[in-house]
Image 1 (tube, rainbow, N blue to C red):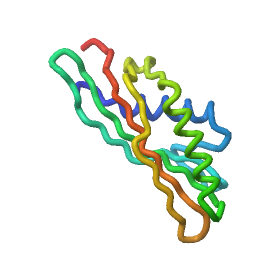
Image 2 (cartoon, helix red, strand yellow):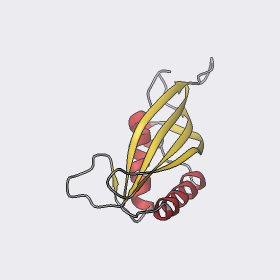
Image 3 (cartoon, rainbow, N blue to C red):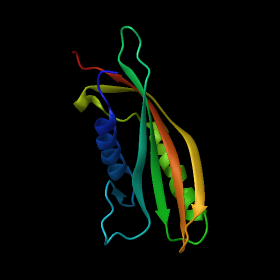
Length: 133
């Protein structure tokens, strides 16, 4: 692994989500934010390089937050996100990376302590470094 794609993935994902969903998407949640909204969570990067290609597998959590007292709103939002994330490749070309594949591996919902529900999607990508060293 010669380069980390973390910042390129986060930047492209934030731009993509902000352009394609109707609720706010935050890297950092401001105090005045109101539900529902989406945040990005933990990111993991695994080296998947070969002798001739610099490749990584990225796993990133996407959190969905809702004040709705049941799972309905979270599930509707998650289904839209899954459709978007698996229907179009993220453009990482500005940072000289290429998305080879994208998928959503995991989805979970759970009630919040005060009220409402949260959901977590695990978004996965296989990425190739296109920058010549």
